[in-house]
Image (cartoon, rainbow, N blue to C red; front, side, top):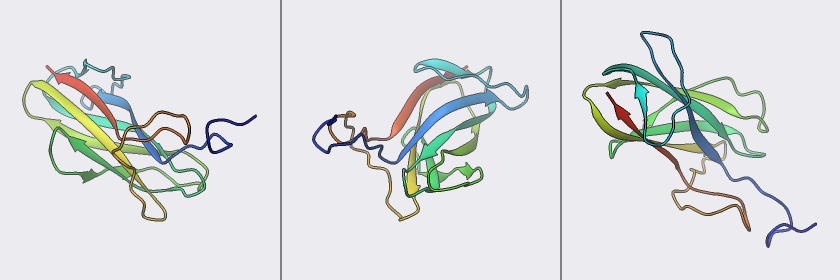
Length: 135
């Protein structure tokens, strides 16, 4: 069966936000767009997974709001075919709405594109962002 224009179902390099929690309590929650990810102002750890099929993941970068891209800490790399865990500690200094955005760099040095595209015909692309509120 042919899928899209390319004849297969490719997966582009990807990094997603999946976990956020209040460090002082050791809690973790699945962030929802527009949700509260911290019980209060303070230390929060974001985390997620990144993948680049056949190439592996060299780096994941995180941006809060319009701030600078900062490196995330990466988990073990078992092969170029496995998802790679990442984490990013952040200090929430004041209450309010925020956005976390992530992007991955594969082992060839190619950085995940900001251009948003659906899965058809050549696989989904774009940075993953989650809006949240610090309370």
